[in-house]
Image (tube, rainbow, N blue to C red; front, side, top):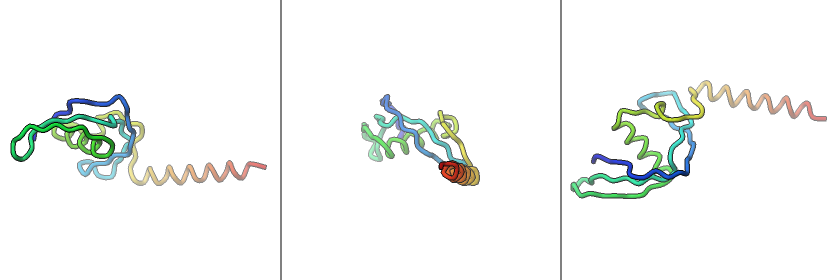
Length: 104
């Protein structure tokens, strides 16, 4: 209960994120790779923990919800709907085919 992020590493990950609150949209979101959190467990005992990678990303995402923030309020590199993502992959594949065909 009442989780608080008490530490954020300088090392940043950028990973695709989506959310059931914003269906059909994904973005590459920058988040600290490792975080420290504190809060209370179901027995109302104070707990602290360091977490990393997927667990850290998931906790940051969910704590953001508690603070009224979505992943689109964070720094992100790219945003896409499913159809835009598919079109981008097809365009990239087409461009690579053209470049390979131009090579003697």
